[in-house]
Image (cartoon, rainbow, N blue to C red):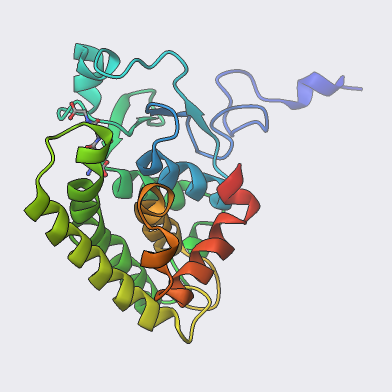
Length: 233
Ligand SMILES: N[C@@H](CCC(=O)N[C@@H](CS)C(=O)NCC(=O)O)C(=O)O
């Protein structure tokens, strides 16, 4: 009788073996970021929900690694987060912009559909919320937080305008969440992950009790999400 190993085809295998990286057709994913980056968290949290393994580059040095020729080949902007992806032939390329990384991770995941909703309409709405973060949250958040972190000089007028914009988007989200547990549909989606990550640094650094008390529904939604194991991992 044939011994056990002889049931396997000769290498290279004709079909993916369970221990081969080709088995799930998901090649290794390596995320370049500095620690505790809320933009990187979008992809890392999506990976938890989607069942995707993402390795965080352990030797990353901000300002050095991201300016190397090797890194610029992955992301010509030289910014993080950047996700190194490897295709089935072993070619490496970069996915950059945190929302694009979160979408990529969700798409290659085994449970991809869950994060993009159940229907085309839900997916459209999920993408609407993801896209609104760029101009409606990230931009004023940077104007408010960057002077505090010392990245740019203080500018009173810009900070005032940023606070007004953040109050505006929190009002919109609060009204939307008054009758909903999650932003879209009945379960967590990529919209919740991306919007919560965009709001994260604001909640941690500047949204004091006085500011946030008018946004009870947004606060409840944010607390629900950030208590989930996938967010805490
Ligand atoms: N819109 C981008 C922003 C990326 C970004 O600005 N990253 C900063 C760190 S949070 C960076 O890498 N800056 C380095 C540089 O500008 O040289 C995203 O969401 O990924």
